[in-house]
Amino acid sequence: MNSEIIECNNKDKKTIIDGLVNFNNCMVPFTQSEPFKEFNFKIECDGKLIAGILSEMYCWNCMAIHILYVDKDHRKK
Image (cartoon, rainbow, N blue to C red; front, side):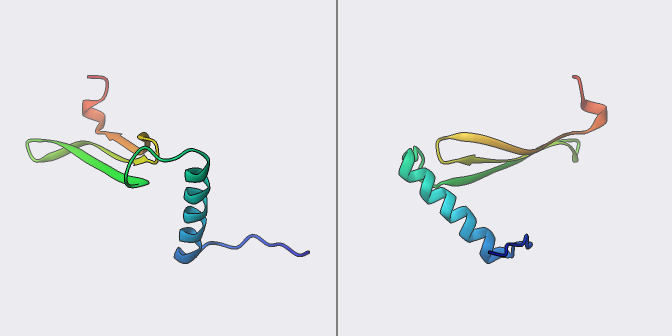
């Protein structure tokens, strides 16, 4: 058997995600109506973006934070 690692296209990504979502739902039923729901927010001060979060709530009301940004002048406050 010959195997190789190949970069995924969008169709491949959807197949992989759908397969995992279906498997997980069979093992532990989801507790939210949509398997994935994005939560992307920002904080502005005087029209300037000073912080932001790119995140996703998935399957069982679990939050996955992909990116959390705070401008250097507003960190540790």
